[in-house]
Image (tube, one colour):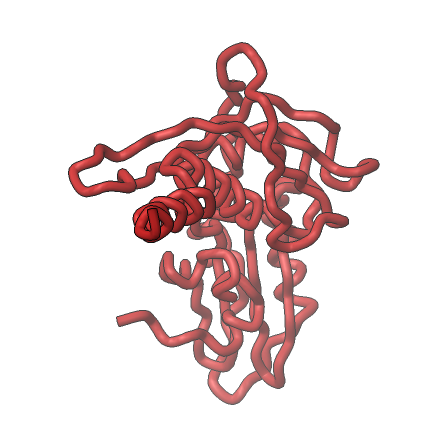
Length: 245
């Protein structure tokens, strides 16, 4: 009789331990939630975007299905709420146990009012297939040859004039989707021509520098044109970043 409590103790400890260890399915669900969180962080930003643009960008992220969009644009009302479906994988809790894969749905808000790293909320998956988004319109072609031909040539010892460079750009009659910037720096003038990117892929842009004895037009390397790398700026035209090795 006196030994029975000793036999029960390990069983009680094991039972208590099992109560605090998450199940393999819970771990997989946490992994799926983290994937939705990564998507939310990738879409975070202050730039106004329509629901179509946000949904298209989310659907391009690997492993993300967009099932529902609520709202018209990021800057209207509370922004855009998305229900997305992601997958999570977790190893079995015991030796030899198989991996568990789950597919779960979460709500993610995209708005300038949202908080960076805001955790997605678990929701039931709505019925129906994932939403399909039309391909975005083709961006206008950046006029490399035309820009090179129009920009003025300045002799050695001379000085580039910003007004003359601006007249050359105006003569190109560029479409509104091409953004231009011109900046003078001493005897030199830098030029940027760019089209808005999608926030994920390298941005399309042309840089030009007009100065004494040189007129150059070039496309920065792809790594410099990635979001946040500063390659598509007029400052990079005046003081080019070194090419990546």
